[in-house]
Amino acid sequence: MRVKIFISLKNGVLDPQGKAIERSLHTLGFDEVQDVRAGKYLELAVDAPSRPAAEARVREMCDKLLANTVIEDYRFELSDGDGD
Amino acid sequence: MRVKIFISLKNGVLDPQGKAIERSLHTLGFDEVQDVRAGKYLELAVDAPSRPAAEARVREMCDKLLANTVIEDYRFELSDGDGD
Image 1 (cartoon, rainbow over the protein chains, first blue to last red):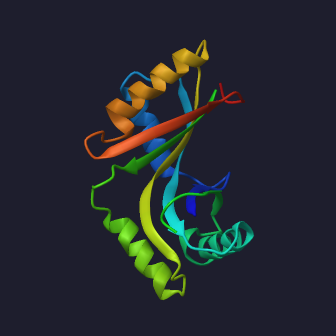
Image 2: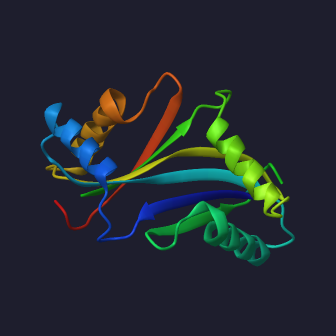
């Protein structure tokens, strides 16, 4: 099963990387852009007997390693596909 | 309009960050995981008169600044919402 994981900073957490990107976009003339937030995007393949089992394992991975749940939120999407 | 941008390394480009995450997951007991690829995830708000106009501007931003199109692919999703 293929998994896409999106990790972003929680609202209210300062995002200097997002701010830097926003400033660069303004410098390049993209003045219509606001509120840039930077995060991480992961793709992986997971081998699991069922969709709920895969969801549980991916949630565990995010909580234990992939996301810092003190300051980050995550969500993920599962899709059938190769790699499992 | 709210925009979500997903930037990932092209197939065939070495991904040491993804490999490191994969090894860490295996060390933690998540042996069922393979083929981890790490990328970037951006959220931003863009002010545009229409959806096609917003798409064109976001594509331009990605090509000029956000993605390195030699080694990275990007895709994005637009949704109506606050921030514009």
